[in-house]
Length: 331
Image 1 (cartoon, one colour):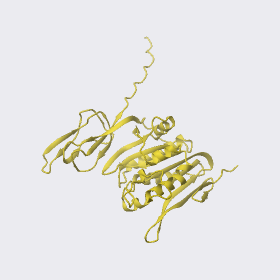
Image 2: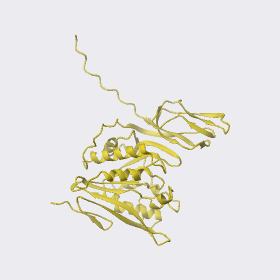
Image 3: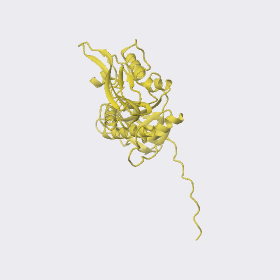
Image 4: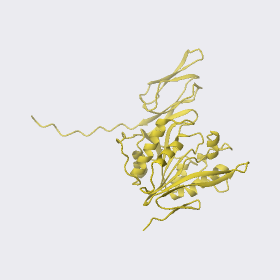
């Protein structure tokens, strides 16, 4: 018996087919319509329903390219289940390179939204009712903000066993237990029972190839772990480092920043991370790690003021010692 078609936004997508559609958001003063772009890949065989989204913050371009590459490699005739892809959620912000909507609202603090609320609230409500409500698992793609770059990482609820399994399957260098924020897509989706992974990598308004590549590989691994696609043909990635706490090292002075800490670098408490210099090149302050951890984020701003966040460190669980092997045979 043929699998039933998939309905979204009044459009029905037949099994074994892909289809693009647009969900209406608002109308500009010019009379042009603003719409949420969606592509549905409805597999021929049954399986989970999953969404991937990007650009909830309009200046975060990495995830848009991740979605494009993931879609390019999917065949609905062999896919088990259904994938809903929303490459640009904050359409108005993306068109102007702005993190926020025109009214300065942060879309990722506006979920689950309302059909009669602000513009942000209406977009959030549209995303929740037409996309999230139909899905069991979601992958929300982000980058660093405010002249910051992030190491590829998964932020999620590591206390939930199934979510933890999916985070480990993604294979990012770090998986971080992250508290839920009221108004975020991840919080609203979890309230509806979905398992959500939030991917962070790269810098805002840049197409960092390394962040894109890690994201594409990770999404493909999750789809394979869910049984939607064949396993990815690659060498297995190293296990993700696990972190339950992270915080920023802050500048203790003002100056031009020369950072010596790279993304992914493991540092010890007290280790030198860089220095601050005045406009003549005189060093005015050193920056040191206040704890041991992995550098998962860093500022890219050349000038920092006292108190500014400089380096984001994730404390990681120690790698367990391998069990002792059998005793060597006697000669």
